[in-house]
Each structure stands twice: as structure tokens, then as C-alpha cells.
Length: 418
Image (tube, rainbow, N blue to C red):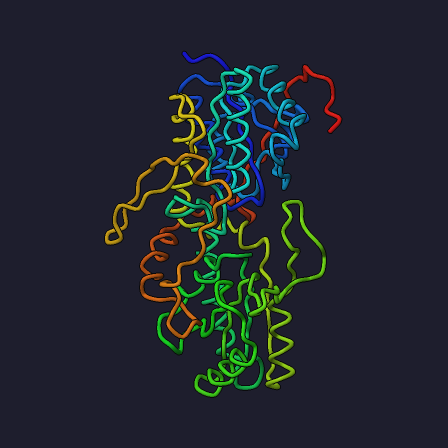
């Protein structure tokens, strides 16, 4: 039996299936006799030596993570800088790893997390500490390089497509005497994957969404308003899906809230749907409703994609296998082997090819007029939202989600003063 413990940590914005990945990690490690510790609130928990012992959880609870949204151990938006700039923090991480005999570090997150895992692996090598670091993919934005898709995206995409389809039926019913335009804001700072997923709600030119605004294309207000008017005149109503990250031709975010930067250095966005609604009302005189689903897009486990759940569990299990095989600075990725029928497998990628590389929505996936998805995009997207994986429901009509005990591990080091 391999000696040492495995430390698992969740990072960044959670997804509807990140706990399914955690379930895969813990289940696979248990089957191999490996003890798993988890850091509370992501990398901050590792720095603070705020760790929990997952061996105190029942097998039923760990299985239940697979249908529970949120982040079972807590997550955080906290980016470590370079090893030179944040040397004390990286050395603190190694001190914590040594204190708890951590030999395998699994960091479940996006681009920045892959970068951190890669840096930790290099530092451990420099100090001669035997540590294998594995990045585990997660993001609803679907913007990680190398992997065909990201666990978390399929479920958010399904929620988006279904929500737009259902809202469109509502708008169509009310358009004669009430709402003529409905605007749905999708997450996606630089990549229009989630906005594109809304395109799965309809197929014909008169089916919603009628217009999709991608961050990959400059926002032209005059052209947008003209197209809204054309759709309303032709169909009687119009459904618009706008990515939060759309920009004007000069590069300015349409939804720049003026709120400064977040912890990752990203501009704080806020309210592109409300802005567009105001412009449609003021310039076209049409009654408008808008929505900002925000966290609902990534927490809607009740509407998860079966494909997404299966892939989330698979990357968790593969991450443990990679770690025990000593495949340092690696990430398990999804490899698409066939479109029809849809088939996939787990492959691997070095972290340096994932870290800080962003996969944008391909131009070939955008319809020629710039306001919808192409057939090529539909072929890519449709398999990712297929299948249902509903959580179990209680007699009260509410899903029976799991809350872990999260028994803390006794600290061995002085408190972190970072």
C-alpha cells in the first residue's frame, strides 16, 4: 500500500457537479487504501492548516455528494502569485504538506488553479519533497484548454437551454398584450460557451433564442436594436440571450459596473441584461422583461446533465489514479472520440498546457449573421446536455442533499499570519 495522505481542494466558483468529482476522488482513494484530507475553503484552508478528515464520513454521505450542488468543503477565489512574489505562501504550503504527510495534492478548479498546482509541483521538486500535483478540471465557462469540455459546463448549459425554452413559451403567450422582448443574461466573461448553449433551446429562425450576443463579437447597438425590431415585426416577440462579457468595438465591457477588480484581477461585471432592456425600451418603445440567473446557472443540480455528472466523477477517479502513478503536474481531460454516436474517454494533459490558456468560442460555431449558433456548434453542444440525473427527493418535495460532518484535523503548525 502506498504511504502518505492525499489532499483535495476545491477552487473558484463551484458547479452543480464539483461535488460529484469530490465523490469520485474520495471513493477511488478509499478503494486503494488512501486517506483523503480536504482543505476548507480551497487553497486558503491549506495555508491555514484548516483541514478535514474525509475518513470520518460514511460511504453513503460520500455517494450522496454526487447529487449535491455547492462545494462540500468550501471554495475560494484566491490566486497565488509567482513563486518569487509569494515565496512565503508556497513554503507554508509545503510545511503543511510535510506536517500531514501529504504526498498527493489534487486541486479542483479552472485555469488559475491549474497554474497554482503546476507551481506547487515545481516548488516541491526544488525542495526535494516527494509530492505529486494533479489539476482536476472544473468550470461552467468551458474555457479550459486541451480538454474537449469541462465538468460543470454540461449541466449549466442544460439549465440555460431549458430555462430559455420555458421562458420563451411564457413570452409567446403574453406578447399580444404584454412583454414583447425577453433578455436572458448568461455567464461568460471572455468566452461565449454558455450563451451559445441557449441556442439549443430552438432550431428554426423563428424559434427562441432569436438573438445571441457573444463576447467574441463586438456589440453594435444600432445593429442589435434593428434586429430586435425585425424579429418582433416578423414573429411578434423576441428572446435575446446576452453573455455578461460582451464588449463594444473599443473593448469596453457593456456591463462594466465600475466596481473595480475581483480577487483574480477581473473587472467586476454587472447587469448587461438590465442595460440592454433599458435600451430596447427607450429606443424601440417595447415592453421588456429581463433576468440575471447568476448563481442559478451553476447550482441547478436538479437539472444536471447525465453526461456531465458521469464526466465529473470520471475525472475525480482518474485524478487519483494519475496521482498514485506519479504523473506529476498533470490533469485528466475529456477526449471526444466520436460525435455520432457521442463517445468520450479520459486522457491527460500537462498542466503547463492548461494553465492560463483560455479556450474561446470558435468563430466557426457562430452563425454567419453573428447572432446564433452554427450546425457545427450544435453538433458539439448537444451531447453535453443529454441525459437526466435527478437527485433523490424527500417527502417534503425538496431534494435530499448531503451535508458533511467535516471533522477537523488537529493542527500541528503555528497559525498562518499571511
